[in-house]
Image 1 (tube, rainbow, N blue to C red):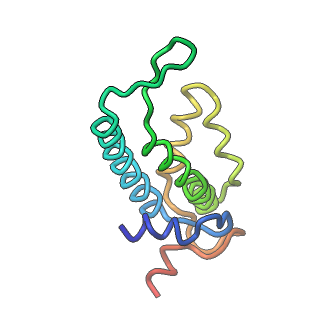
Image 2 (cartoon, one colour):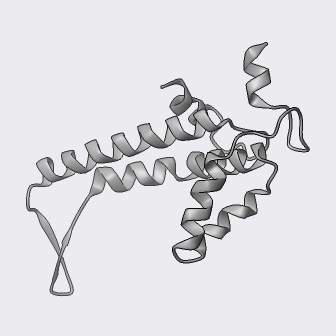
Amino acid sequence: MNYYFGAFKKYAVFSGRASRSEYWYYLLFNILVSIALTFLDFVIIRNNLLVVGGLNVNVNILTGLYALATLIPGLALSVRRMHDIGKSGWMLLVSLIPLVGFIWLIVLMATDSNPGENKFGPNPKSVKDK
């Protein structure tokens, strides 16, 4: 839970490094909240469909607002995670390559931290130990 709120404390901080556990716990909690909000959207709106141009469109207001609220902290955390393995934040764009890019991004996010200090700052593991 601390990792989740830690991402919001560093709302738009794209510098520095983020540990693997910080990234994956944030992602896990983010997915759980998104599922809960999707369920709430379904219960609250319950078949209230918005008709746009003759098409029925399901409206997920809570889920959409949550996605907007977590966009920048999630992106900043992902960039800091890339920094932790010694890569530029621009490496996130590898996910735009169909299928292979997404798999490669998961591999990068699961890679262990570079030991010691790198050009992006001190290792978050060693900072927590002190």
